[in-house]
Image (cartoon, rainbow, N blue to C red; front, top):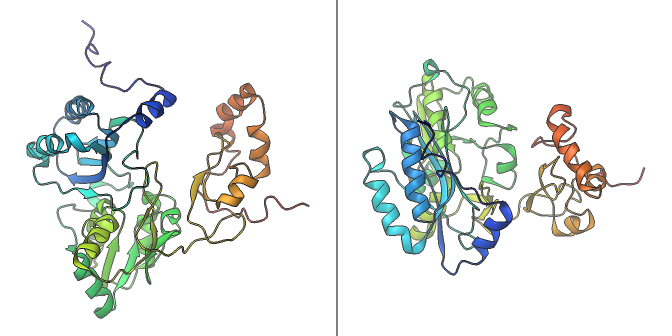
Length: 353
């Protein structure tokens, strides 16, 4: 008997264009949310299949990682299925108390994902740590938005942004340490080195939804930091709390998110610049050359002028015959011909020699 029988339908087989057309034809609204929980899961594959089957039946979309250490989800749910979704998830022993972070702004009207992806991973956030490097049951104190603001104003803390540089570039808390990291795995030892000698200072950690701070707080406490705190629910829930409680907003700019939106507005400020012309912009985009796909900030004017590309080299590529472009994409990983997320200087890329 085929061991994979019955499993082949537990994936979304539609192509990208079909998915886009289906999404655009929808007449209902979707709720964009994220959630995570560190919890020991005995059989991640079995749970993955059960979640996928249920959420497909509810027409949910998103990107969800399941592992033996827990779940990490960014997704959206049709409004008319919200109650059933919530009851189902909270009805599971693993997730009965998991809190949801609902998106505060969503210019896509809930169309933040094209398809449902539920994948089994070794970790729900890749961190490069070994079990002896931290104890996830010994984490920092969780601060509400009010407590967070009070700590910034009165306790002379060190505020640390636990996100990647392309996230913090478009928005961050005032006075925060902003590590020039591309990955969380790279950032952890970087932050530990930056904080060396400050073990008795009050440390305030924040990230998008809280999951990276959960690991970081345990990691720092393991290394002797005595007063480690984290923003409960991350920037997403901070935005909700300050609006509901009419608190001062100490976050400047845009909160980067990992879906079709690429950002949600937390304040009216634009603190970043177009990487090509230097004008104020927080418009993240991926280079139109699919072999490059560099994530960078490009204002609408430069996007039109440079055809959505980051360099003249990439403009040349997108005008090649499709078969040549395909060959370039095939070889791109081997040759590392194009930039990834690294901070690169694009300011002079289109200047004449």
